Length: 438
Ligand SMILES: CC(=O)N[C@H]1[C@@H](OP(=O)(O)OP(=O)(O)OC[C@H]2O[C@@H](n3ccc(=O)[nH]c3=O)[C@H](O)[C@@H]2O)O[C@H](CO)[C@@H](O)[C@@H]1O
Ligand SMILES: C=C(OP(=O)(O)O)C(=O)O
Image 1: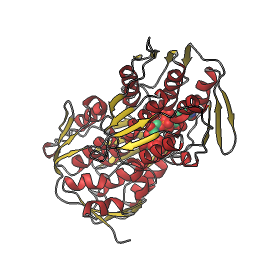
Image 2: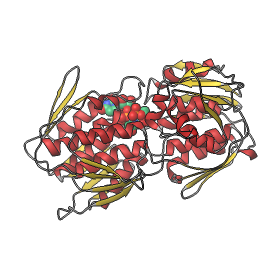
Image 3: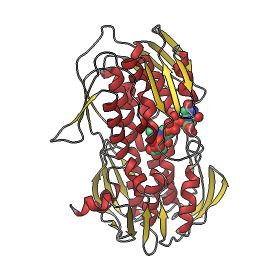
Image 4: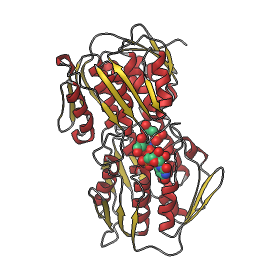
């Protein structure tokens, strides 16, 4: 076993502050883009070569679920990031999928199951324990297509409508990413015209629309609407697509470089996907630039503005992705000003993270369960902390890079759900992160 794989498999890691982070590192493919793309490939029912698929645990779980649904899944031997998904043939009985309870994104499989089996039976989804995570909008979408939805304490069942829908207009009550993809993929299996009002238009959703265009669909999204039109002729050739680089991993790495006052290039991420964070860096006085596929952070030249950061997670187009907010918190703790942070999208995340940051000595005033305020700069001191969800884990690692002494982070299982090997990427930039004995 190599040293790096030993570190990635550890249940506890130790972080020590050190030299500024320098160099270049490439992000993996995005977990949150790969998961709906895999489900879209399955719903499309066409042989799909999907490249840049990250090897994190949630993606592994999803690939296993697809296999249990009857899809053939192969990883290229020479390039393990390339996955080939082959459609099932013939009607099948709906599979039992207990592992679907392990990830939030199992809900993306409903349309593929409706196409393959006429019904989907799934346990309530899991994923990060970040509070109540509803699915009512998904059910409204399926019911709008005439499907029957049955709920019980263990999970939900969706039974496909007998009649195919040819055109549908749906208005979402709010811009849920999951419900937007559900509506799009449900339209795909019916080859249906769709007008979706008040959709989520995050990069992960835009990516699905681009994938549909590759498959011959007309698919576009602007500020208030997604419009889909099926291909004129039915198409059945194979598809090739690439998962975009992980914007959340890129932002986490950028924050790590910034807190260490280092200088590094983070490659493999689209500039537009990280724009709100580059703007936040500029606001704070940290030189950063997002080029075509690289974010460069030149924090060695930081000239603090003293301006307070307002990081409010938002579902609106161009808003701050909720998954960016935690790493920015680790960064802002070291920056002058009175900073305000809020995430009402994942309402349990502050509760997972703030008490852990407090163990490192952070003084953070919780204005409510989802809103907090703190003054910076603060001096953190190493302690033993727990990663209660994916982004809390990465944030504690970033915070540990600035804390005096040793920070040990337990709960690496959460981190590995979302990142193939974040500690190793930080080590490539010179971070002192090691496997801990206990
Ligand atoms: C696997 C994946 O990609 N997870 C992401 C997904 O989570 P998630 O699936 O929770 O996100 P959605 O955008 O769909 O939902 C946003 C909010 O609305 C709630 N809601 C959603 C649907 C519904 O039918 N009813 C309902 O109440 C959710 O519980 C959540 O509080 O988007 C979030 C941002 O939007 C990200 O932080 C998560 O990392
Ligand atoms: C909240 C997240 O994941 P999930 O929705 O899968 O729990 C996340 O990716 O930060």
